[in-house]
Length: 316
Length: 316
Image 1 (cartoon, each protein chain N blue to C red):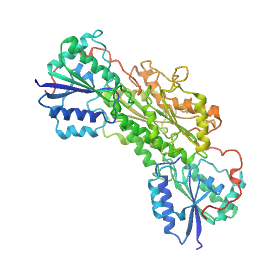
Image 2: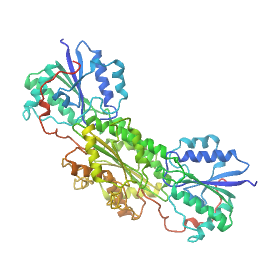
Image 3: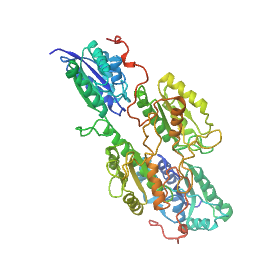
Image 4: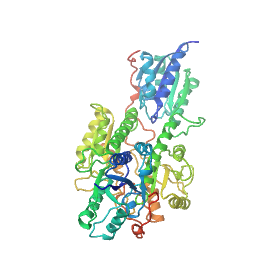
């Protein structure tokens, strides 16, 4: 078998662990030096191949490669760049072949989410359609855990731990002062179409009554009446209500609840801001619950609570 | 000297360390048992005194008291409750004296921010005005670090570490993919009138060019032109721009930049959402920088970047 070089690149939003995958590729390639020669890392994903901006990882020490496991960000730079098809943009693929040939690239590893897997697939077609033989492997990476076939994608575990920890921290604070202050808290969670990260918030709950009390997933149509009833139940039973809400929840009309937000510079509606939509709804529909997390002093509930007759202290 | 009991309570938004202050009070009181008898903790701050909802901490073991140092939330519950003056609400103070007398309270420790210190002061007046002798001590607690006299308040250090860590994490992600994706990232930081927490983000920068590149403090009037010039400088020099913006920044008209937000259930304007205001401004005034942090695929900048002539790889 002829030994050929490999190309590796990182793509899409970085996770806490994308460099761990990079480490795995580089260490494993070194263990198979009879098949794989050098591994060139593309700077900023596929852009690094198109611009021939390659990093020769073979000159790096074993310890530098191992250090990738605790290096944040994307060590080689990432990108959001969508390859169009060979039919639509043939010159782009000719350029890829030019660079691959110049460096004898026979293996293509692309580390990213759904669109990056699509890039790996498109590059693989240059073998069949443009007669350049190359082995293409997509390496999963996503916080949303929405990649088909994979069960638990690298990146999801870290995101799950982060949101579960965050909602537990916030829930302790809310529970600490819900009597006269914030009673309802909503944490907005990433995931436009997939509810895995929102669902991971449930890991924070230790038993009956533990926060979060309500999860709003993008896969389930938002039912205002049912939601408000659940909020009232939690407030009555536990004195406070903690909600994890996916940025992507939709109403019965199929529209994002947060769709009225501003558009980004490309005209995409920016999601985000669904938590205020949800908490405003609670304020408007269920009465003066204290729903502000940046609130100042509250007044006490009606009634002369502080003038109850003196009673003995439990353990006096 | 006659031995008298003490009252301790927690007030305001809890910090990561309010229970460490509680631990300090309880352990120190035990070391001075010739002067201080039992320490009663009020449940939910001053409300616990008004409703005689007291927790006798003397029955707790040394190890339970020591465990407060790593207990999250407010161990005894907190509140946002503002005492009005003796003149305005005399019955409330008569009630406090009634409860204090029933439990022989001669020391009052109140753990909280500016308004809680005001409560400690008002309670201290019952000595001079209502002839109930009591020693009142305010124990500082705030994430904003805006308490007079104190230099560095318990709670600020944890908040400072948290925001500095968060902006560093976000900056690594932005730097990783700024070439084709997000180039501008703004972290909104708490602190309506005090810029300490926003300023703490600067701890994340390790040297020239390190993020954050711009801090927007509430103490400094927002100057749009100067701000946009700084953004362009950062984008030109470093390829990305990371901003820490206080929720409380104001324009030359003295209005909050985010003041158009929704009001809470008490009619206070809810701050927050100033980061989108800032990033929209950049998008509108300086051209199509990629400012969305939830953005999807971007198109490459104009020009056939990928068709640059093949050049040799640096370390080939």
